[in-house]
Length: 347
Image (cartoon, rainbow, N blue to C red; front, side, top):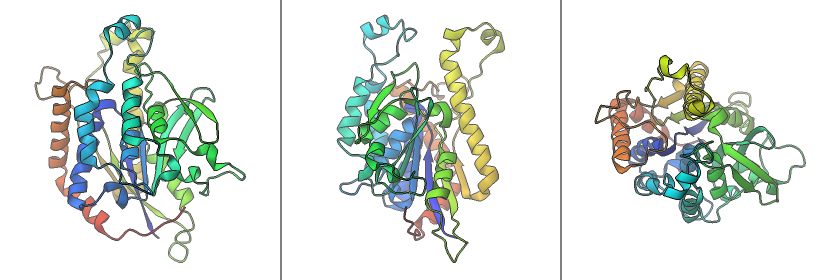
């Protein structure tokens, strides 16, 4: 039964610097781009940006994990920044999105250019939610190329092929933080999309379901056409800051808007992690770390998804280094497994 290797990257805004730092450690140990040692990479929100940056291209080099760490560290403040007038006009984000999307879109265009899903050399899955069709939307590289066992008969691949920059903008359009994204495929279909974290902040289960479908039949003679998923799943930090009952009991719509989003993202990630532990056991390697609950602790980072102050990013990187130190033996086991020859699988 052949092994299908899956890398899954959670959402979490600026906290994406945590999985980026862990991936930089793995790349250094593997001495090769991380995207080359997985059959499929899945991401949501900031994880979707990481996944798109790391995905091997048919021509040209992918970004390295170290480059993505530098992107968060050096450019995160541009993404989560607003002018006085934008903040004033939106009443601090109560009557409009908290941040203008222009800086994020500019960085995505700079880094990804005109690359499309069909230009990738390995498989990519990124989540978003279509607010007009009221359904999850999965950006899939194989569907953009017109392949895959999950492709409906007669589907035009051009309707599934999008610019990577638009994929990243869509998956990271967190409600209240950025306005919804409009993404048009090469075939002309238009989608109004928001952050995939509203239903799959941890996209690992989505990735496993897709992999079991698109790689089915690869193991003929060795397992009756089945494949065995091996999943490396990276979180963006466990939030521990409590929501006191005495405060929350009197909250209304405005007060609950952002806390409810954070609770939903956390609950989804934790649930998927539990489910995959039950299904895959040792073949599910989940790495995450608590961010700390005491805001008075000078070493604890702020867990807000948009706190891109240099000092907070430095604390998030420190937490990533602590995660690596605490899990070095588990990470080394992952490295040894990934150094083995990867069974070629086709879609």
